[in-house]
Length: 248
Image (cartoon, rainbow, N blue to C red):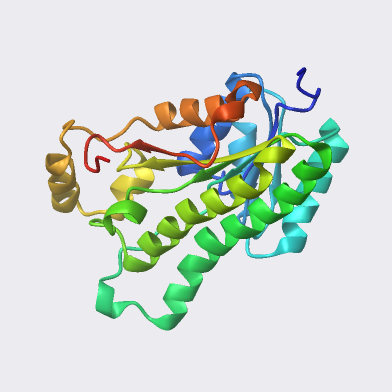
């Protein structure tokens, strides 16, 4: 089956920096047309300006269905359709377990878990109608091992993303839409280094069997592969890239 002309139009959430920006850069380099989105409109505009290729930026809050709809409308108006959604937005916190307030728990899970659900829901409806689509959710090792270096709320949200990936994948597979997750361990990103004090970061690296932080561009290349038309048989999978910290 020949993919539609807009199969390589991708929306990425949480793309103002960190892994989201790396994914956007990689997709653009691989020939995707990319709409970078983030709650910080100024930052995501700067991120888009720094990327070579056919890219645009839009401020959206992933906790709001209407704003997801607006992103899909904007990308469709600019490029004629959307083939890919990458749910990457997250609010990372390392608050100790018994210090997490109800408000902080809600804030963290609303961005990562609710945001992923709403993104899959909006994209799923859109892609089911067009009978083609690729959804890639960014999970985390924290959602598989309980989050040794992150907060319980972040770990719970990422674990939920893995489950949502299976649920949406099962529901959409017959309509030409694939849903998969990538689950990175600690990555070599400024955002990771800023999150952990040097001694704790050193301890994390020492605990990794491979002996090094993960390569963000490798994660981005995996996302690009899952976003391709050839990924038709990748359905509901979670791809682990964690340096051997979690084996199954």
